[in-house]
Length: 377
Image: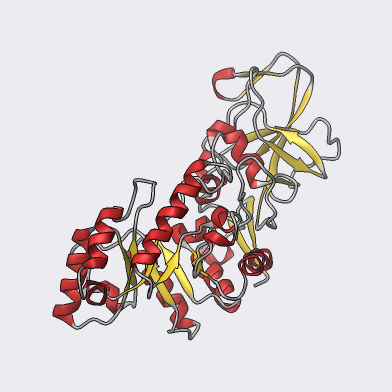
């Protein structure tokens, strides 16, 4: 059998590009025409495929993109150039990689500078090489992660010519608790960023991530950076998202078996059947990003799928390549039927809650063994 005739995997991951674009437009409508809406496509577009996502965002008018690493930026630049949009901006969030400065002008990437050492290295490289590509400046306003301190930002702003030497065109910060609208740190960070903006009045400014967009116009400034919201994720912790679902994960039933009450299921024998049951085996497991923490036991329920519109709870531990769901209450269940594990009926937030994590981690963990389908766009 040749590679061209290999059968499709028994699992299917569908990305709805029309829903993704609709989510972006929801953000555009919320912030208004004055504010630019950038595309955040780091981590392979949150695990969903950098190229198809970037092309869809580009077609909808997106002209500024953010990635985490230089290699992501290089890949993205190739996609954007192939689409004949050389005018787009790509910012590399994790900053300047020592020894790789030449990659930034070669691929027209802008580092997000977050330390005085990075600023000095980048300014020196620009002066020595004549490179014209610009940069962004990240100032920490309360997260204690990447970025200059406020004191360092004040000193940088006061030194003549350094903004121009580094080619800085954008100043930015990142909100730590935007998904909790009432958290006091939101107001503190906003006040600090207003001070930062005043230090650099001629630069574009960006503060809001996905949840920050929904904190209100005071947080929007010149550019917003929605990530998880565009991919259908939550914007307020613990609340249903207003965004459309983008991802649908389905797995085919590969076997159905009958089991009697009192038998156990899966590794560790952690779950005992309380009734005679029909158990369906799905060819998906933690190697595919469906975390073991979503398993079920006698003491705690796990995640649930949907089959023919009805819930099919997981039974026992999720293993590397397999999981078991109870289809006793779906008598028409048959081998080959597709069980929805994530989608309109089982949201990514539902799955994240069962896994004890967040929707970001669920999406970025989805493995490479799925048949990937991109619809719309």
